[in-house]
Length: 213
Figure (cartoon, rainbow, N blue to C red):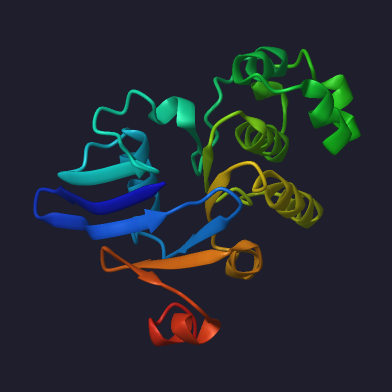
């Protein structure tokens, strides 16, 4: 998947200037950037949640200009909880076509949660369930926006392992402020700064762009 020439502005505020990003089956693409750099805006533009002034999306040789297939081909985990609070896990897993037994295998305590509503889970538990749904969906690509937010360290490690497993079947784009985790996971890495994306090949590149000291 290629997303290119993304330009987004709100009045006099320009958020993205010809930004681009790529994703490939078998790879994790990491996206780093400071708060307010426009990472979430870029992802929402890709998904059609925000209408950019300019945007080019291509799946292999197929140009997607009307977003009819985005929701089927790309599943998105926003940086905040997105499942309706009164939806049960049973219903959510049915809608996403994901086997709940896999969730139980991932964490046995979910054995007792099948008929619970998302509002009955802790924030961390709901986040884990949402991330599992997105990663295990049949989509060709996944976008994970701050997936490790409010997740206990032991689950961060489990989720990193799940991401590595699922990239065998899909392309995964992930952004998080735990930049060490992103560096470890990523096959390709980009930094979003001043509305532009910059390919990153080493920690030295992050220092050069002022992301880390």
